[in-house]
Image (tube, rainbow, N blue to C red; front, side, top):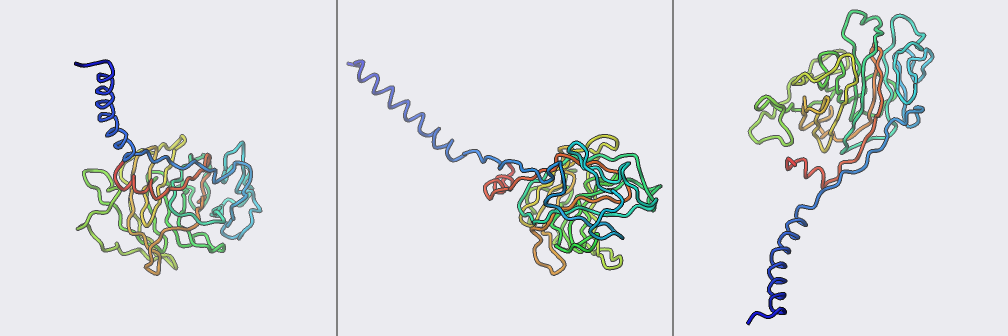
Length: 279
């Protein structure tokens, strides 16, 4: 005879049997929460950054850099330098590894010699060496040039570019059997450059662009307005050692440019594992 007590016991047993596997499954698939964003540029001053300008060293006598309502403005109307504008960058004082960086940038109208007739150009440099006395210490450049936004320029460094498999850059893992020989760099003076072209046109030439950079271990992904356009694997420095960390820099190259919302967050081992798993 099924009493109320035995019925409740039966229901409880069934409920427990149904519920516990779900709890175990949920525990095995616990969500990996991303780390919080931290401002890399505070929107007020260059605290935490160094400066280098070609021909000027670590000074800015002509106002190439200004900050307006939280926006970094490079080579804007306040620039009083010669018609032939110096090139330069600001760089973080500390090094970063295993990170996700996000920022917005857009071009202005002003261009200067020697690039009056050339495409507007700027860039995000990462894994940069510590020297403070040169325009391009060893680094990787996330290229911001009209028509080439998302290209990777390896400055005295090397990488294997993710092949275009099915029309999109390989990510997040390098497959066995893919090429393992580095493309020979182009030597120009003291700088040897590899140039890895991006895939896909998502840039906005006269509006803000959102840039994302994922860099962890010895690999990186370049995103332009939410799409992966380039991937790099097995990055190495000039010594051949894995390239996994360094300073971060924002550059100007004879063209007016605006930058804002420059922020960064750590990629934990758990989140990197999630990325590698394709989740």
